[in-house]
Image 1 (cartoon, rainbow, N blue to C red):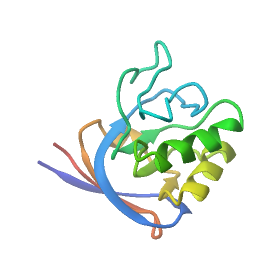
Image 2 (cartoon, rainbow, N blue to C red):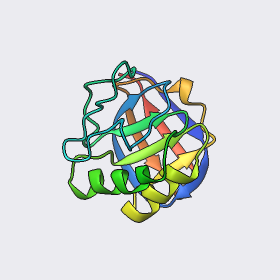
Image 3 (cartoon, rainbow, N blue to C red):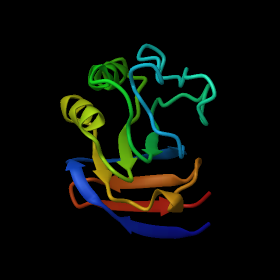
Length: 134
């Protein structure tokens, strides 16, 4: 088991922890995620069929329409969404959803250093991501 600390930029303040779920594919919360179940439903998405509930979601950036902000909020409100978000580059759709959902979020992180199943301690307020490899 190894541990590393990554630095990022605070987008939405807060602290959380959980198992990472990582994809190199962009995510649109409008069409990629079922906001009632937290399951990735987009066909051929790298993590299709995975559930985001209680996970730290790690992905490069968002895609798609502004309705995704509400869908992210809806998933979190339904207790099936991620508990934190780490991006390479934050974009307005996910940022707005994270703000409304009060979901800790950082960007400008080298997401290639995080793997699905790693345990992540996210201090978004300070922009610190501590990763414990499984």
